[in-house]
Structure formats: C-alpha cells, structure tokens
Image (cartoon, rainbow, N blue to C red):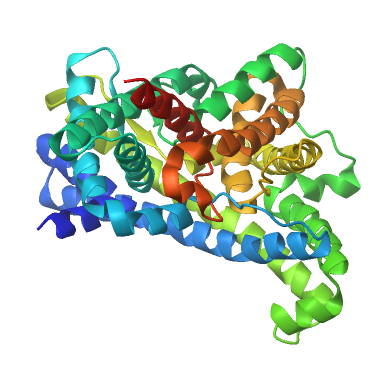
Length: 418
C-alpha cells in the first residue's frame, strides 16, 4: 500500500489532478465540469512533462559534447541520479517523510499565515530523500528521523513559496498562483540582484529590432537560432568523428547539431503550451480547496509556470547561468577543489527561472546578471554539500538546485551540533 501511495505522490500529473478533483468536488461542480477540469489539469501537466522530456533529450548530447570538446571532467549535479542511488538504502524513510511532510505542509498552511500548498511532487520527493540521508548520516533513526524529517519538509514547502511570492506577483500580475520549486533561494537572489543592477533597464520582452529582424521576436525562432550556434560550437570542438560515431548514428555532425537545437526549442514551445492549459484549469479548481479546507491557500507550482511570462528571459537566463557555471568551474580549478561541471539541465530549468525573476525586478540587466550569479551559486553550493551526504558524497553526482544545497548544509550542521 505504501508503495502505491508513493508511486501516486511521485507523479506530478496525478497528484495535481487529484488536487483539482478535490477542489471541483468541494465546489459541487457538475459531473461533466469535474471530469473535464480534472482531465485537463492532468493533460496540462503531461504536456509540460512531455516538453521537458524532449528538451532534456536535446540537452544531454550538448553536455556530453561540452565535456569532450573542452576536455573537462568532474561531478555533474543531477537530482534524479543522486536520488536513484540514495533510494536503495533510504527508500522507506523517503516515502514516509514525503507523505507526512505533505500533511505537515497542509496543516502549516491552514494554521499559519503561510498559505501555500506545494504541488511539485517530484521535487517534494527529492527533498524528502535528501533530508532522509542527512538525518540518517547524522545519527537519527526510526520515528525520530521520520518526525523531524516530515516537519522540516513541511516547513520548507511553505517557507520557500512565501519568499518567492513578492516577485511572483510582479511576474504574473496577480496573487493567484505561487511558486513551488526547490531552487527558490537562487531565484530570489537573482531578483534581488536585478533590483540592484537593473534600474531603468528595459524588459527582455521589449526587443527593439529592425523590420527585417522582426522574426526574432518569436521566442521559438530566437531560441532555435541561438541554440544552433551553441550546438555547432560544441560539435566542432568535439569533432565530427566523435559526434557521428557516438551520438548521431552516422548523421553529419553539423546537421545533428542543428536538429538538436531546434528540438530543444520545440521542447520549450510544448512546455509553454502545457503551462497555459494547466493554469486555465488549476486556478479555478483550487478555489474549492481555498474556500473549504485551507482558506486563501495558493497552489505552488513548478518552475515552468513562469516561462510564458518572459520567454526571452528564459533563454537569457539559461545562457547567463551556464556561463556562470563555467566561470565557477574555472575558479574551482584554480582553487584545486572538487570540480562541479555545469549540468545543462539544471542550468536550463533553474537558470531560465532565475532569468525570469531577475527580469521582473531589473529588466535585461537583472535577467543577465541575476542568472549569472545564480550559475555561480549552484556551482559552489554542491561543493559544501558533498561532505554532509556521507558515503553518497563520494558518488560522481549530487543534488543540483540551490535549495537542496542551502537546506542540506544548514540541516547537516544543526544535526551535527546536537
């Protein structure tokens, strides 16, 4: 039974679909409206997941070509990889912390001013896993481990959306939706940097282009062209022989690079469409929960929820964060520390979001500099987190997004102190 519940909680589409169903039932909507709203909510999440899958599939070769072309080796932060390793030993603790942590989130939202319900199921799962590992390494066992872990998880599931909400209001222009993704420290930092450096800077979405370049206002076109240039650079650096023998299946390496770049843009386009569909359904459905169970509660949703509001900032944020990761890698090399390679997947999803947050407070300068600082942050945080993870710290991967580093380091030192 526990495994079944865990499987449901791990699937964001089903989890959010259930939330939508509960909200519609509490509003006593008709059967047809309830079925339609629930299915469309699930459909929106599946579309987002499908777009993310296409995007990640196009990004993986980019990361490999970067490593081969520029001859760098080190640890590549990846949440899925480190969680996969950790579950072999900490699977039961992870499941229980996640289940009771979600309950704690609802209770905190009901009885405190922090009215946020965190609905990004896979990130809840990853954070529950990291908390389980750190508490176990620190010596906690049994019900103490589960109880402390659930309280920590429930608290951060309400705290992080709360600190992101002031910027979220600027991004989406309303207070209906909150932000639920465990990279929030990096995004809030980007927004703060944007407020410092971006005075009078125009938004990334205000592109003043000559008429013959007006097609670049279409984010799908600008992303395709920009990523094509980057892909061709890393493909040339890796060499045609490597690309054609190991990645393209014999296809010309330049053609392969361009196709992957446009596939990346297609993934972004699909995500944007999924977000629009999801928002149209989840916000009205969540009204029922707000009215009946947790008054004034807001659904905290995954990072792509902000992408449609500043598509140009998405690309600028990714590129700036990735550059920050490269600069951070060079600094670590000079300091002769563990090398953290810039993983293109976290730098896209988190860097893009940092770009949107930076743009909201500081326009183009905020998006560029804020995301660059974010890239440095997610390069150095994993270095400090590695020793806290015990034996998992010797693996060739670690947690990638900013909140994992911040929560892990603080929690590790608190547990170590006591």
